[in-house]
Amino acid sequence: MASSSLRTVEEIFKDYNARRSALVRALTYDVDDFYSQCDPDKENLCLYGHPNEAWEVALPAEEVPSELPEPALGINFARDGMNKKDWLSLVAVHSDCWLLSVAFYFGARLNRNERKRLFSMMNDLPTVFEVVTGQKPVKDKPTVESGSKSRNSTKRSIDGQPRSNPKLAE
Image (cartoon, rainbow, N blue to C red):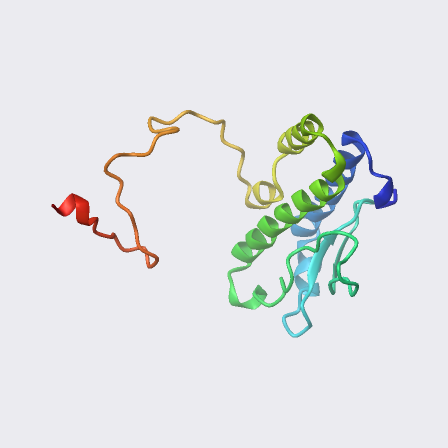
């Protein structure tokens, strides 16, 4: 299906689901093939999921701007510098971001309720990250502090160290 013909929530979701399936397969079932294609000695590579459920490791599109949002660039460079499982998790997170951006690129002309319905349908599926890491989505449980900030929470500086609050010192 040509990208310009995606008009309805159902068509966009079908495209999202097919691309997601391709990425899940690349990062799980075809993981050894995927890993070997991500040679750090090659140029900036991206992982693409296609609407026909095929996946591909390739250079980014040459035309700027490209027809669709581009996936994370240079996934191959971190491959040998990280634990394999961590690297696959990182690629999975970036893949989830790309899938959302493509779906909402197609959904730009949808109205508010249609976008909500599309996101709800997408959200009913586990993320690529959840599949790759074996995590199951945790049911949302309200926490004691939900919606309100703790009064005595410590502010942290950029380096993560506690920052003193002059008003509290007085």
